Length: 218
Image (cartoon, rainbow, N blue to C red; front, side, top):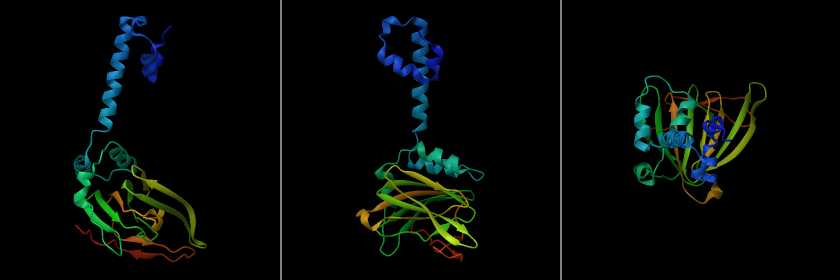
């Protein structure tokens, strides 16, 4: 006998694919159809943002969004090559920063990295941020800090196109395009609130310096 509770908990798709329609009663068919439509509409709503929609959603904030909110916005956004192309400008010596939007509560940037370009080891000094890999390979290294022992290595990971990472306010990390990637890297960054003066660190040292990111290149 068909368990309608199971259907409503997400098993309806498996049942609908495997069972002939003629063995299902009219009421059951209506339940399956209703749940399928709701499920499909929910999935469509989760991915209906474009690049400009993401920027507009961020502009609409009247308070600082949480990191979870930033993740959710990025995850529902499909970003095309054409939308990012106006911000896809690289330079030698250091990665380039291109601002998409900024208000009192949040900012969004597109960063373009040549192989070997990377940030200093830093925290965001009061901001949290989400980073989406649009194109290329991103290396992220995280660290722990102690006033007596100084900065120590914590972990390392690699993200490719479609990867999403982020940092809470106390997190210390370094981002970069590895030399061995052999390709350009484009990442999309959202910070809440907008970045100000950052704190920078050196491995094995307890010294903390201050660092102000360069003005956006566009």
